[in-house]
Amino acid sequence: MSDLAGAVDGLAKALVKEGTAARMPIAYARSRTLQFEILDYIDLGDFANRLALAIPAVKPAAKGVLDALGTTVVRNALWGSTVARAQGASIFFPQSDARLIPDYKKLRFGASNAWTSFLASYFEEA
Image (cartoon, rainbow, N blue to C red; front, side, top):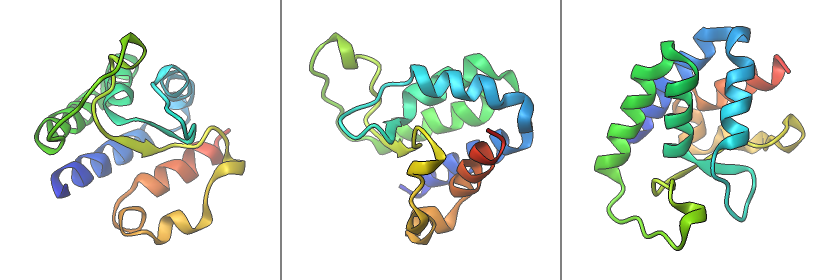
């Protein structure tokens, strides 16, 4: 799992580096990414694929996430065409800043990489 966490960290840093110019492509990618029952979580692989297409500068970091998913996800079962793009792991990316969870940054994952900083900067720019 540490390879995947490191890859997410790299993606988050790449997204922050792109700044406000990437806000609309990120928003579009997020809106088109698979969501499941809890709408604040999106499929990480689907999101990485969409970012790679939408923002060329983050394509290497997105590919890093996809590669790490390939070695982290042991089994991924799909039930129907509506979830055919699912990659087997989801990530917290709320639909609005009102849904940000203050304690998320206290979790081991939230405290150990740049994903929390990415979320904060993304919603700050909104």
